Amino acid sequence: MSRQSHQTFGRTIQLFLVDGTPNGLRKATIHGWTGLTFVATGTTFAALTSRPELDRTGIYILSGPDAEAVGGTRSYIGSANSVRERIKQSAQQREFWETAIAVTTSDDDLSKGHVEYLEARLIQMAADANRVTLDNGTNPAGQRRRLPEADQANMEQFLANLKIILPVVGLDLLKPQPRAVAQASTPVEQRTAHETTFEIRHKSGVSAEAVEEDGEFVVLEGSQALMDTGYVQQSYGTLKENLVKQGILVPGSDGKHVFAKPYSFNSPSAAAAVVLDRNSNGRTEWKVKGQKRTYHDWQQAQSASQERSL
Image (tube, rainbow, N blue to C red):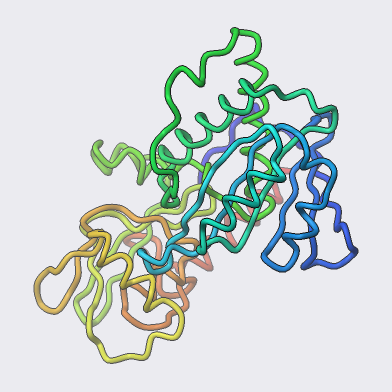
């Protein structure tokens, strides 16, 4: 289990359902922050652009499925003096988006220089995280980031709040990759030294190893995955196709794929399904390396240990 920083602390996020329904326009704020985040879908886009707050300087993100990468996400990041007009234009020019996010402030204190800095930094951060395909043609020019030192510090704090609020509203494009993925150039023993390693050793001969880090289940490079078993893939077939297309899964020997790179899954079951080429319960398929204890048993023991320490 990942180590928790002693510097973490609680934050209060207020999520307001504008029309009182869970699928309607949403407004998210953080206590003590002037930022206003609005989240809309195609059906609530008109409600978004009718908000008076959008006639302010701010930034916006359009996000949806990536047609060129099965199971992937494509996003576009922009900024404007009037978010309302620019987000309308961008939405008309792009067919992929399903979610629109607009960020302004309650006191309208962002300048053109501020939002251009935020746009450039968001594009850079999203590219570094490498969780989505960016639809932005080029990165904003470097001079757009030049702000006085005090303004830069304020905008970095603004970004820190966005990194908290965006995952809450369903967008992970800024979330850093787990160490086991991001530090792939270092030996696997160093990257996973503080994590429990899990394994699948199947009667078919396939073998795989993984670690859990910050809620993500990372299958390590060198792990194997069965291919063409004939089982009907109800849930994860498209994901596996995408991994092959990306070169993460490459042909190996004896009817198996091999993970050429570590890959982060959102659950042990997704990872097990790709490894075994069939829908699987990862909580029982994965076992602590060298033991018969399942992931489920290990997780239960971790929860009990945490309860005793409270």
